[in-house]
Length: 255
Length: 356
Image (cartoon, rainbow over all chains, first blue to last red; front, side):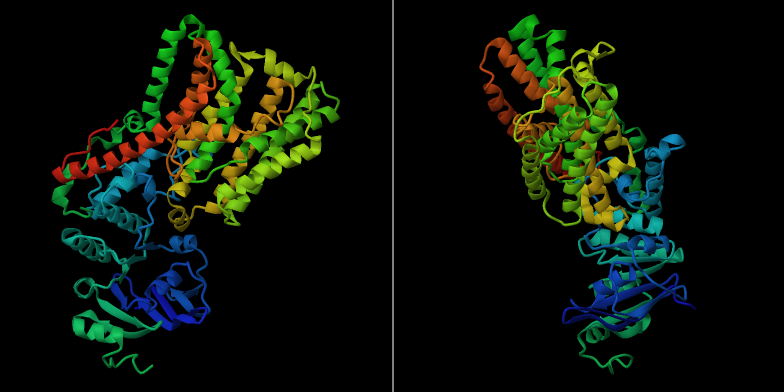
């Protein structure tokens, strides 16, 4: 199977720090790949590189098998790739529907639309169906997002990403700020989105979550991928060992 | 609470489609500050009688705030982006000097000369707005500093061009417009201001441009990530404020027949105060055009009322200062209370009540 998104030999230095050092990455359609690594291992830099937010020193990115140049976040969005950032990137003063459609506003019909007027009703209706699809409880479509709980905000951010992503969704620490119930729901959501055929890249520090939802785990250390492990063969000890370099993982650790 | 299993979604609001503008308006500070304005008007109507509560007096009040209202439209946009424009009074002076110079150079009284003069004033204002916007968006200098700089520079250049002396336009088509013209019984100045405010309000609340203005002020990084061209938008907003300062300059020329080089030193602060009294947050992301208009009327009504009931008008400054601080204080506590309330109602599973 051709990987939907693949990175080969990505390198990027910030001053003397090699944030990415000849790093590889790949994810297949309908697959959950967990991207793990200790702080500073290069996970976030990898996500930035794969979402058009980082200029690379070296390496190539393939989308559906074809090499592409990722220059802007918009271009990456158009490919059907969305990122849910750890800080969620919502505008707190806007309501959920306005956030979901931010940058993608539906124009009003006819001449008014050309003048920049928007079809708010239709945007609210579609947002509601996005939230319902996800099973996300968003109590008001007209209250500012900033007045909502962390869980609701997370739901809005994930619903937005899934609504627009047709190929790949990156989730950066989606469960870090959540309680037990919400976490369970996010993990359920991940599985449901995967079943729709969308590839999911999960960045997480939580080994139990990684083992629960992912199909494969890719471990990063010191700016490169040091191991790729099928989740069914993996254990927490093995993953932590690969992250810290304590264990000799056959594939990759020779570097 | 985010992603609750489907059984829990029955608490979702059925009537959210009907969550009307009225309901959302009730949550706005501008609505209760309108109440404050009504109280003030009522007080002076009782204390000052027919002299205060007359069409002539309100016509006078609205003429006094016409230009401020036009500046307030631009300032509302800028403050919603979490910026500030201190230069607006100086830019107005600069534009009026350019405008007057052009009209003078073209011989003064003809309509053609006036038309070109007006255009020159708008372009001059827009140019300063562009400089402000460019420095804020691209050079990343804080708006306070940028506009403090252009405040000084624009006024200085106006004085250089005129040696500090006002240019007076006698018997021009422009001054005729300001003094004699009436549209539908309303003097021309408030009429122009009303149109600008309405267009500004519709643009802010109903169009993509307005939506992006809120988004940039609320979370510029988030806006950037979804493809909003934040820098370009900021430049457009500052540019628009500059052009509106140009409009204000032309209207003052029409009203007074002279440039007002020394008379605009507090204009920026008066406009900012009105915008903030009207509920626009200096931290960006929220505010309304309606609030700005109400915020403009409060100082103007206070001044007029004090004069009529025989209180020294200097008290107006004191009163406005108190209203400004009280408005922001109450708005903050109200917002904090709304947040607490939202949390407690969520726990019990009912929908949050409407808060005033």
